[in-house]
Image 1 (cartoon, each protein chain N blue to C red):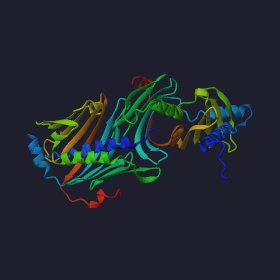
Image 2 (cartoon, rainbow over the protein chains, first blue to last red):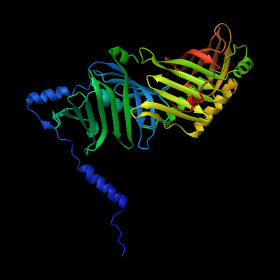
Image 3 (cartoon, each protein chain N blue to C red):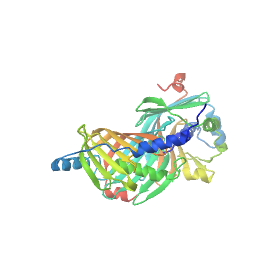
Image 4 (cartoon, chains in turn brown, orange):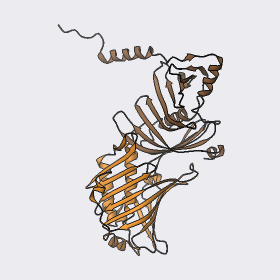
Length: 229
Length: 211
């Protein structure tokens, strides 16, 4: 006799996923004494430069199906005002996408497929995550078991943002959804004078994606340089 | 995040437009002369410096590399800095290799359709047939500083590229000085060519192997 499952396999998988994600817990951050907490909170600011800068990166993009390609990225950001201006170019110099964030996203140019709905907002979100300190309330500062400083911030839309800074200054930022599921992860490698030679961003949103950003140049600029464009 | 296939297609298209610029050796009372002189080119080997100008850049973003062409349709367009990348076109096929975190790997480029479009354009340009381009209308300007100006025919293309200005050497027939691609106000790319060597035999493997 053949027995039929009570619920379709797809629904079972969905319920299991739901059960799993609802039971996810955030990584444990070990509490420290008052001085240690202050030091950890300060150390968690190291990934985020205080002054306006212009960065140029080579960006390798990867998707689950293995599609890879390389573009150039130019990013201006002004930490005090939160203004971000970014452009994506082909190696031949053709501008595929250009947008600016100043309390809202304004897309100047978007060549298909960069004109997809919400692409500009998502890209600016990624850039702000990498270059600007979390704006939300600091919930907890302490250390991980491996000795890295770790801070947990309130994020937008019920999210949580963890910033982890290792003793060698390499750092990691992870955002979690309201079920504590990982949304995006940024890892910085080979950090010199607070500027990483390489940054890797992994997104776990509706489609997984990975961007590997290799530094070409980084230079301080004036706030006017960011505001005038 | 979306795929990067289309950006690469566009890169290939722009590179193809640049290759075409070498096929204008005559100085050039008219298109007939351009076409006649184009037929004399069998190979090209040149350095190039690409300067990207944008309002958000204080200084141009400079890339450098080398260009090789072998008639009728083999091309190697190689960037040496800041990102090593090699575009190879040979026997109707196009491949691009880029040096990244996984070494020198082949990009997953666009569809066969886009390659066919590029090759068709190159084939026309290689015979000096600029006036047959379906995307751009060409104007030849002679004089002391000869130029060819390509203007987009359709609004869709005009949104991407407002014009292309090709500057020809006035005193060295066969030598191209620069190509400027204007996308919008304050946003253009200048390709300057130096050490241009014409009609010297090139190793066939240049167009098949990235290294």
